Amino acid sequence: MATSDHIKAIFKAFARRENGLFIQAARDLISEEKQKGHTLLARDLERILSNGNLRSPSVDMPNDVPVDKERGLPLVHIERPEFGWERVVLAKELDATLHQVVGEFRKREVFKTYGISPKRKILFFGSPGCGKSVTARVVAAVLDLPLLYVRFDSVVSSYLGETAANLRKVFDYAQRGNWVVLFDEFDAVGKGRDNPFEHGELKRVVNTLLQLMDGFTGDSLLIAATNHEQLLDHALWRRFDEICYFDHPTPALRRDLLNRFLSGFRHKNIDLTKLARRMTSMSGDDIERVCTDAVKAAILEFRQQLESADIERALKQQRTRMKRALGKPTGRGEKGKGKDAKKS
Image 1 (tube, one colour):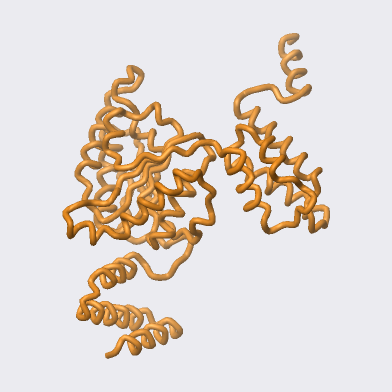
Image 2 (cartoon, rainbow, N blue to C red; image 1 turned 180 degrees about the vertical axis):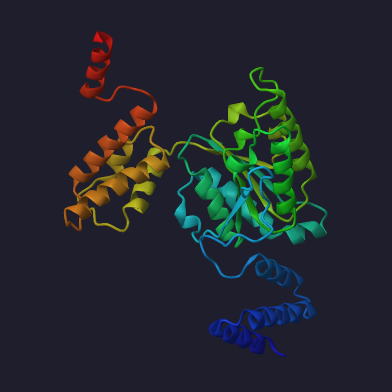
């Protein structure tokens, strides 16, 4: 059967929602591509088919997802991110590094013919809210791979030896598929073994983690993300092929972020360059929240254009939230509360 006939069969099966015919037609197409010598394309199609063809932000959990022995909780969550590079605004050097990582992973089969490997184990570190988790999802989306999100709330167990056992289950599961695997809040299992305040169990967990990372040979990209890189065991740093620092955005990047977050709402009389300069120490998440709050205020007042007052009010609110997060006093009410507490 010609390629055009295979494609027609795939479309017909999809339109009729006949999954069996859809899969068979897809396999026939893959077989034909192999016969033509298009091995890279055939392998990519096989991986897409085995990992699920229909894109959706959240994927139904397969029956074989690993679970915690004691509580029965799933150790991973599977997602299908749908956004691309336009979702993030990154520093030029970081953007170039990530594009290289993606490019190498796409050419991994070619690299293999030369006896070399692409970068597969990446560490993201930096301050909270600077885009580490969302960037990992972008990488998954542009590679057209499902994201395997490791749930440390389930992995970490109070039972002796169970955390290490859960980590083994996660790595074994990742080994069998083709994923972008995200270990968010990586310091939860990767703390330094020389820390006198950590008990022996966590040190054994780190030893297990080192062994699992060394022995991982799956066809996946592993990304670990942390806000507390200073807590990581020194030996873990050497296991990563690339280390990416997510810094607070510069004034120029803050302006780009404002442009993107406000692109869907009119804001004619607002100077974004001056506004960006005033957002010192704000992360991408902080800037997004300011923009979202300002847009909400305009919508609630039945306006289709932002006013500077909307931005100023949202900016003040976010600065107050940031001070509270640092435990700093934010106004007379809190100071007064402190005085009353002394009197009582």
